Image 1 (tube, rainbow, N blue to C red):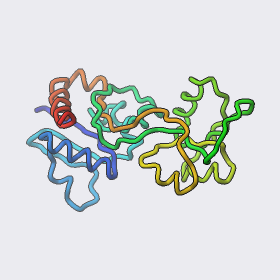
Image 2: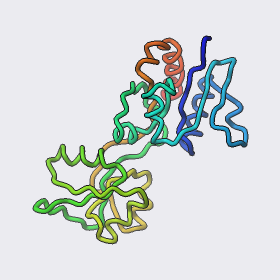
Image 3: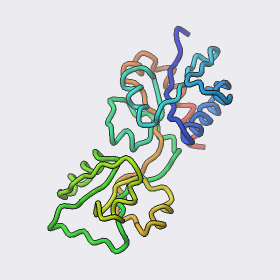
Image 4: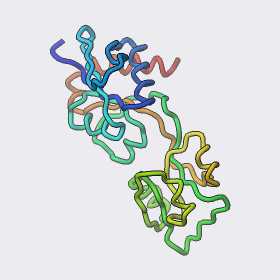
Length: 210
């Protein structure tokens, strides 16, 4: 094999689940399980090289060719729109992108809706599809506090169990889109290494189906 297949994994719990899935598909790299601060791990026998990156950066590494393939949440793909091929829904990290508000919220369409979110593009595209005039308030921290303090009318955020919302007297009022981890590929790299990438994707697909 002339070079490694470079694979970008998202740091954190999701990345650990993703790696476990790759390993079960026959693409293990034991070094990755060792307690250390390394970011790049290689299995020369299998010709694979894994590296950990911030989840929101996976699309950048894949789009620009530093990674041949990677795993990113659908939220990241929708928010940043990297120019990559989306190959497979891994059915991991399932949740949803939703609109939430204080209990009893009423949307008065005569006024501009104030929307607090980390996902400005997703929010803008969603409300544009509804023809709703909004004021986006981009935040990086705890979004849930915005409607409580009157900074926003609603929030757009990822909802998994809804526990945090309930504890803050908020509730989901609309679901925008389901979210899960997706296998993505660099477009040029896919054409160049199609057989290798499709073999890996096929092995992962069998695990998803099982």
